[in-house]
Length: 100
Image 1: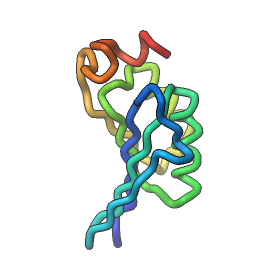
Image 2: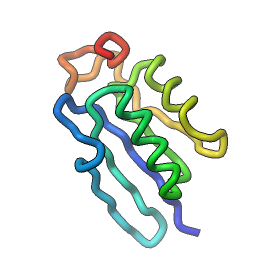
Image 3: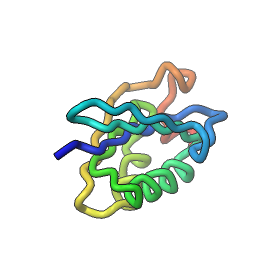
Image 4: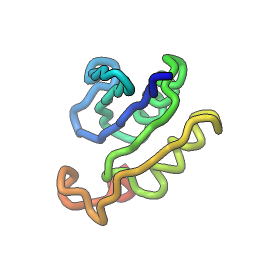
């Protein structure tokens, strides 16, 4: 069975309803989604779950609080993983927790 996974990243001007792309390989279908803040990330995660995504990975800009919001927004069947930076270079060397 093919893994249907998603990667959600933070970008200040992203619109999760448009800034989305999917890559298909024989074993993995990976959807990448840009979001502008945690609220949009929650909505994107819910939308991805409805589309059959079975795993979500979050970019390093998500702090502990942001990860918790995503985990709480999807069912327990979906594992949520995180790429980790102390301070994210794409967010002016800050954590999303400080920004959102």
